[in-house]
Amino acid sequence: EDQVTQSPEALRLQEGESSSLNCSYTVSGLRGLFWYRQDPGKGPEFLFTLYSAGEEKEKERLKATLTKKESFLHITAPKPEDSATYLCAVLHNNNDMRFGAGTRLTVKP
Amino acid sequence: KAGVTQTPRYLIKTRGQQVTLSCSPISGHRSVSWYQQTPGQGLQFLFEYFSETQRNKGNFPGRFSGRQFSNSRSEMNVSTLELGDSALYLCASSFGGGGDEKLFFGSGTQLSVL
Figure 1 (cartoon, rainbow over the protein chains, first blue to last red):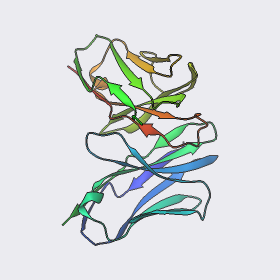
Figure 2: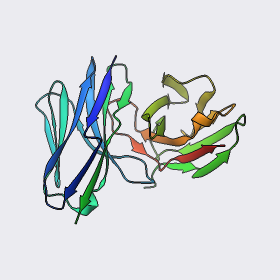
Figure 3: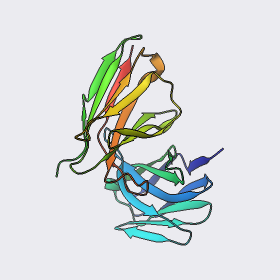
Figure 4: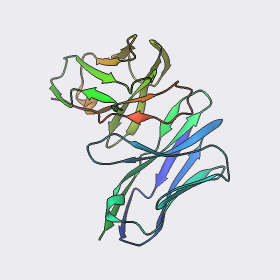
């Protein structure tokens, strides 16, 4: 069965302490992998789309990478405002979008 | 440009009742998707509508249904509510719904079933 697994479930960092979030998937016919950020009480907000292994995208302190089996969201020198739940989602060839359970990130000042 | 609007923001119902949730997509977006979000199951896909037609459906019972109007606004209905239906229901819109487009989410409707 197709699976999207995110790790760790929760991550606590000190401000400035860089780290990475992982999204591994077992999906046949991947059309794209998406990263979203969700703040409490709000809907997810789009961050990146990656389409093929080796692709990388950056936005401010965030950088997303993709291999054939997983994606990483690297956070460099995080700030408290980066605290949120980060969701990854994979899109199948049949347009089925499947989300992971998310990583809850807390950045302490 | 206004974002995706969902109403109501909060809803409390009792078991056996039915509920209708509303979603207004971003102007010009023709695809609307619905998701259920719970702490235990995460985000789960309910269905997607494009140009008033249901184009894709997740693994939910027939009690969950939806529709889309000619102005792309969408409604979702849940009949015979169960306690397990308590969740945050999210609506998302995109331009052509080609499947590889980013989704714009609303803030959701928090449904509590007592």
